[in-house]
Image (cartoon, rainbow, N blue to C red):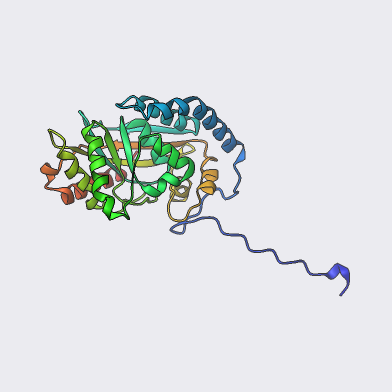
Length: 288
C-alpha cells in the first residue's frame, strides 16, 4: 500500500458529558474560560483575607464565629454572581432545627450566609471532599457517620448539646440531592434529633421547613436544560461541574422560610417529617 494511503489510527471515543434524567449541561467545553478564572481569582483573594481569622474564630466558644463565617459566604456568593432573596422569617428565639431540600454544593454558601448561627449536619464522607469539606468545617459542620450505628447515640448527644448551647442546625432530611424541581421523601428517622435535643431545652424545639430554589440564570427563568449547571447529583465530577457553573454570569437563589412546627404540635417525628416535606414542596411550587 502506498505511504499516502496508510490508515490513520483510530482515536478512542470521548466520554459523553455528565447527564442525569436525560439532561446534559449547557456548557460542555470542559474549560474554565475567562469568567471562570475571574471568579476563581475573586474567591482566592476573599479567602486569603477572611478564612485565616475565621479558622481561629471557629475554634472559640460561643457565637463569635458566625458573623465572620456568614460574611464570607455572602461575599463569596457575590464574587461568583449569585444573588439571594429571602421570604419569611427565622424562628426566634433560637435555637432552630432547619430542614431544607438539597440541590447542590452551592446550598452551603446560600444557607450558610443567611441562616444565623446555624451549622450543617452532613455525612462524614464530606469531611474528605477537599475544599468543600474544609468549607463545611469552617461553618462548624457536624459530620455524622450513618454507617456506624454504634456511634449513633454519641453523635446524637453531640448534636443535642450543640442545640442546648444555643446553636441552630441545618438538616437535609432527603438524605440526597435532587435537581431542584422535586423533593425526595424526608427520612423521619433524622427527626429523632429533635426528640433528643428537646431533653436539654426548657421549651419545644422549633423545626422550621425551608424551601431552597434556584430560579433565574443569566437573568432569565431557569429551564429544565439549565438545571445541571446548578444541581450536583449522581456521578457528576465536581471539577467539571464547577467549570460549567462558573461560566454563568448570574444566578438567582431564593430561600423561603416557612412557619415552624414542634413535635408536640404535630404529633411526633413522623408527623413532623410529613408536615415539613409538604411545606417545602409547596414553597418550590410557589417559587418566584
